[in-house]
Amino acid sequence: MSTEAATEPVVPGDEHGHDHDAHAGGHHGPKWLAHHFDTPIQQFDTAKLGMWVFLAQELLFFSGLFVAYGVYRNWYPEMFKAAAHQLNKEMGATNTVVLLFSSLTAALAVRSAQVGNRKLTGRLILTTIGCACMFLVIKFFEYRHKFEAGLLPGRFYHPHVEHLAAGSPPLPDNTGTFFSIYFMMTGVHGVHVLVGIGVLIWIWIRNNRGDFSKEYFTPVDIVALYWHLVDLVWIYLFPLLYLI
Amino acid sequence: MSSQTDVPHDPQHADDGAVHAHISSVPFYVAVFVGLLCLTIATVGQSYVDLGKANLIFVILIATMKASLVVTFFMHLKWDNKFNALIFLSTIFFIGVFFAYTLNDTDKRGELDPDQNVHVWEKTGEQAPGGMPKAEPHAPAAAGGEHAPAPGGEHGGSTPVPQH
Image (tube, rainbow over all chains, first blue to last red; front, side, top):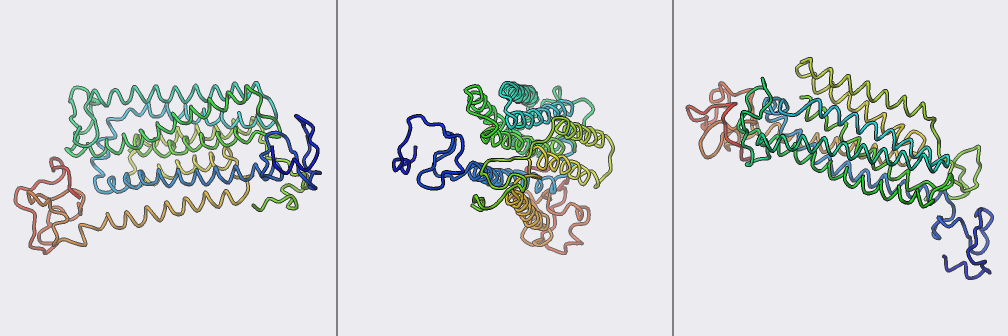
């Protein structure tokens, strides 16, 4: 695959298992080792570094929403308290457990990829995808209730008394602000869950294809990191929105 | 990158250039998950007890404990290249800066500019929510400004959406 390889006689379809003795001349590593890396560990570290920089960007990106939350909660603490009563604590808690469990299965998928258990890796990735879908289904029912009750962002906010949670405190007129923040934060998070499902499917297909081994499991690791980040954001979203 | 072949990553495996990532046991991962569940139960349980201002501190504390478990063990930061941990921690630091500066501003606007109608809603003269709720009942005297809220200006419940 590399141009330097042309300097040496190359056996077609060669599978040199070891690359560490090949410093002289062109080096042929395993087929998953990109030609611009010297060693698997270099490739692995680079991928991880890149992913952590991306995750840093994701956190900074989400922090804008969290700061908006902080500013408005600081301005209208009573409104936030009243509005949070309209969110379904049980559904939120269920979704938290679903996401935490999916994080466990994602971590275990990386582990089974590390030990080279391809079948188990596949099953764990599928479980993670299943949990992600379950999360979105629960979220859908929550959103549907908010739409029915007219608990919508900003100027679309028009609460229907008959749909509101029984025994909850009266909602101030500016409660639409809370639901702007609620829909923005959970919506952007939901988009991340959708993307997560996409990359998990991609990694599941590659796992089935036999791309991964004890020596090479980087993509599983990287996708799991992304999935843990989605969980991480929800860990803060749940208590801040539902448990005021 | 620093990971040249002459830098051993793991003393046991010298420098064969292969990936020797730490592999945790299944029971260990399950234990972390159980810890996360317990903290979730704790935070939901706490929400039924009103601790006043301490509510938010509790919520953030428990969420941060959960996040630490996920980052340290599920995301392997404990065994990972320390540079990745540095990236993560500096991100947290800058989020802190973002919060501190923004809240320091928005929290003090009403207090700093009482003469520029900051805490009075421009169109109706009603007291705008959010400015300085603590000084609400006796705003005119305390603030000493000539832009006292118009009589009949209500606070709390029925104020219009603010125009910050």
